[in-house]
Length: 70
Image (cartoon, rainbow, N blue to C red; front, side, top):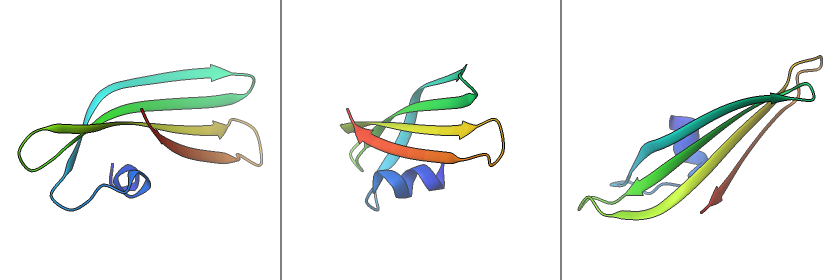
């Protein structure tokens, strides 16, 4: 989760709350997708983030991680 906080550039005082997670395998790739809500210190949802982590299941086991704000 700390890696996801850094990728999403979450400021101090805000937290990430996981609201969904999916896992798929297709064409030799393992794809994990997380949806997070960014919550401020007052408890308000200020943004939704998607983090996708794709790993090739065959050598050289390439890994791609990306983020976008929904």
